[in-house]
Image: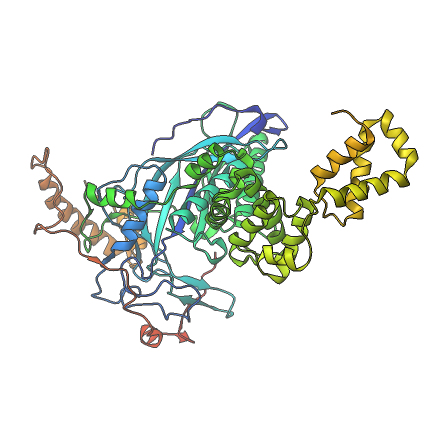
Amino acid sequence: MTLVDTRTPDPKRLIAGATGDWEIIIGMEVHAQVTSQSKLFSGASTSFGAEPNANVSLVDAAMPGMLPVINQECVRQAVRTGLGLKAEINKKSVFDRKNYFYPDLPQGYQISQFKQPIVGEGTVQVAVGPDKKGEYEEVEVGIERLHLEQDAGKSMHDQHPTMSYVDLNRSGVALMEIVSKPDMRSADEAKAYLTKLRQILRYLGTCDGNMDEGSMRADVNVSVRRPGADFGTRCEIKNVNSIRFVGQAIEYEARRQIAILEDGGSIDQETRLFDPGKGETRSMRSKEEAHDYRYFPDPDLLPLEFDDAFIEELAAGLPELPDDKRSRFMAEGLTAYDASVLVSEKAIADYFEQVVEGRDAKTAANWVINDLLGALNKAGQTIDETPVSPDQLGAIIDLIKEGTISGKIAKELFEIVWSEGGDPARVVEERGMKQVTDTGAIEAEVDAVIAANPDKVEQAREKPNLAGWFVGQVMKATGGKANPQAVQALVRQKLGIED
Amino acid sequence: MSVDTATVKRVAKLARIRVSDDEAAHLEGELNAILGFVEQLSQVDIEGVEPMTSVTEMAMKKRQDAVTDGGKAADITANAPNSEDNFFLVPKVVE
């Protein structure tokens, strides 16, 4: 792979060292578990958390004479992901053997794709931010390739003083290795890229993106250089399993490399591990011997070939992706911030789309973001667990629009629906929460407040802003049920304030 | 192309095959003889010829995505020199 620098050094991303500024260069290899029922080359289940070695076929255990047969759904998922990454799809790709020995790799090789991957170059638009003004900076991160490969099994080292336990349930599960170009220049950009990539995979339904279950893991390549200079020597930080850790690992690793270089040393190209407990990276000494994977085409597998019609059919079935959805929401009148929050998860966007149907976009967005997501966040629940359905929230918004309840009462109504459920219109009816729009009743309250506060009436003639105080008093006296616009108009009229 | 003794020993190590110095010297000769035969292939003009991946014109066989296997952990570990609770047990390997 030829490394091409697509970015111009940006002063605000540089790190100050003792001897001047440094620029961080980051590239990522993300392993994403393909969402499928069975494994890439066997009919064993991919389900998480099964009993040890329960999801293992003789193929996965590499018993002699077993032959791999590819799962066509995994091929479809890889192509769909490629399309989602706006990438070139290779109608012919080849599976190779990557040879190495490790107890959780019973074949002695991993079936992967080396020279001819299924997906070639693509791009991901990454929004970094929001900053204090709620604005985002768009960064384009290039995709070098995506290829299909087998996952290895899992070793546990803490069960026995002298032995490691090996479970092959993951052995043979399909992974997509998604390799970015070295286009990221800060830990924030790297985190935003990983977040965006996960979002795309989740929208496509090609990977569940659950990093804590290991279905998405990142290898992060980090190097530093003087701004605008040639790329420096990189270190690869293996298997970082959360977005936050990716940020921490990069920050630590960049500082470590800068310290070495500023002391006149040089960086050894090596593989390192991130220790979340210490927030440090350390060298993986056991891998000191240079890798020599001796790739060669797997003689058990013919080249993977398909035609344009296959790709077109998959392209036609793709869902609307986050970028398109975000643009559409903005075209419908939402701010970049609101649109970004709503598309952050497909389930949130789906919820919003149900609420906004036939209603004002901005109002619906405010309710979903501030009230619903706020309440979910406070309760530690996800959108899938929401006690308030889109129909219920929509009904609350309609009640405000019709003038049946005030905005303030609507918040109370939301809380009632959240904790007790029910049809919002009926709750309003049963609990007497209706807004008083009867001008006579409001007028009586206004008159009462004016009569009780002659001094304030006098002041208000000098300072019309005091009208707000009267409005507040009337609202209080009516338990918040008076229509605030009607009160406002009456107060101004009675105090003789000109508009 | 030819190999020296050091290359023979490195390849053997990568393949986890123990090779003594005597054997390495002998293997060096054998491997170089094989490489010599293979070398002759480079005399063939293959300009514009696609690499052949199969002797028959056929596409790769594909499976439907269905769970058809598994649930036999005891069988899977039956031949293992050491196992416990259906885990394979191997001499400790730690990163």
